[in-house]
Length: 161
Image (cartoon, rainbow, N blue to C red; front, side, top):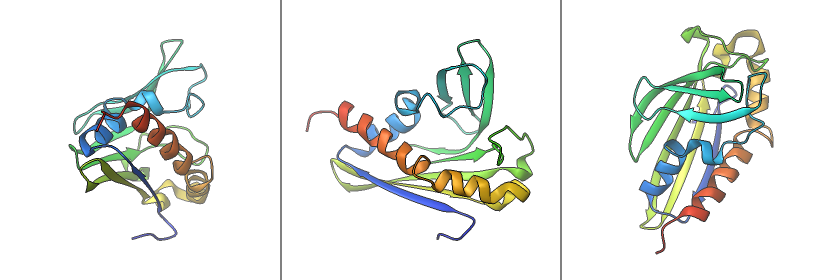
């Protein structure tokens, strides 16, 4: 369900679900753009720890780490849910009451075709700047382009049929 406080984006890729899930999670850094970061230094690696309670963060070239959120649910290869702790100024807010939710579901459409649905919800939890967050993640440079980048890496690394 989509409302003004959530954004949903969908991409379908020609690859088996397990590969698609692994690229999204275990190989997260392979498709995450270097300019999508919050630290002051250049992004060295984007990390998604692959277990419930794990961290979702960046490590920059200067060794600093910047939290983005937590892994709320991890159910391979069907779904992952993340808390998003970045506010309207793209700064980390540690308060869980202010975090939105990014839920990614993976659906088999055929043995070598997978649909990925990403829903970023509860955006109003970001307070007075929540519409800035919504507009950012729904903009052409937001989740749609990130999923396009992800799909390219999936296609390039998909096992031969």
